[in-house]
Image: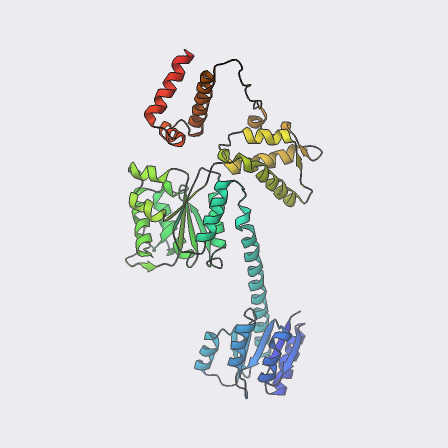
Amino acid sequence: MARILIIDDDPAMVSVISDLCREQGHQTVAFNSGKKALEQLTTQAPHLVISDLKMDQVGGLEILRSCRELLPQTPVILITAYAKVESALEAMRNGAYDYLTKPFKIDELQLVVQRALENQSLVRENRNLRQIVREKYRFENIIGNCSRMQEIYRLIAKVANTDSTILIQGESGTGKELVARALHFNSNRAQHPFVAINCSALPENLLESELFGHKKGAFTGAVQDKIGLFEEAEHGTIFLDEVNSMAQPLQTKLLRVLQERQIRRVGDTKSLDIRVRVLAATNEGLLEKSQSGQFREDLYYRLAVIPIEMPPLRERTEDIPLLVNHFLQKNATHAGAEPKRIDPKAIELFQQYRWPGNVRELENAVERACALCDDGLIQVSDLPPLIAKQTPAPEPTPLGLPLEEFTRIQEHRYIAETLKTCGGNREKAAKLLGISVATLYRKLDSGKSEKS
């Protein structure tokens, strides 16, 4: 049941409209004066306002403007005996939901009332959904207390409400799309679309059509005009995931879009202006790819106006207990049950594992353990085999060695671990170690000769 405010200086008309609304099961509050109705507009908090257009002192347009200011979600229907196109257009321009002329049909009024209330219900539902989404993608939901994650939080908070193009870099599973959504839903674009596409999922010709749209007859199978994702994201955000996989010809077209803020549909001869923020993500070193000629260098610098580097999970193991707890709570919420507990030995193994799949792999491991565990306690036996079969004990410190020999052994182990972290890339390892590549080669060679 809705509360409907009815305003008309003709008491007979107020009575008729009130009866028709009550027939539909609604509560009505009637006024014969626009001025008195305005005085009680906010206290009545109506779900719908029906007002005559022409009244003494305060008319329907003034009622409409006050509703738009004080009750922006409340639809307004205007009724008048003066069926002029100009007055109808003015009413609609000022935000009226609909416009009826006297004499109107009974079913016509009731249908407009029904549609207005259904529309208001959808608006309210969409607003609630948007609030839920905003809660889901708050900055705090990007879990992590380590210093690198804290830096990322501060950077996101600074740049979320700008229009700058952002390049989010990191291995698969590090949470790049989560950051992209947080940037969008904490910006002034949050009421507009967030459109994401994985650039590696489609071949070049289909990806171009998906991004920019096409005209009918542009290619075989183009049986009608199609708008692209850039147009769908108008006033909002487009997220180009795995942009590193984009073919060179398409890179050129994307560069033009970023420079000119215009797109052209495939097969079209005219360009369209766009007002879209571009976020991109890469799971490869895009600067290195651009320097080797595999990616346009000018496009890289257009995308990386503000770069965000997501650290792999193995470089922030102190965050693993926090992440595990978050996933246990999430699993419990979905299952409608109490959160599972976890054996500290299982946490230790989680912290020793290398996590090639990063946070995504950790979440899957926790979900698996929750499904397999007994008595609400996750034990080592519930973990994936690769994690459970690790040898957790560190090597004992050798005693009786000269200090110089012990230092050399520890140095060699540290170099080997750094190389492993860098996937065998000696240039990257040397950079992390703060030594030249030549020095790294010399230390590796000395380690081999001493072993032999």
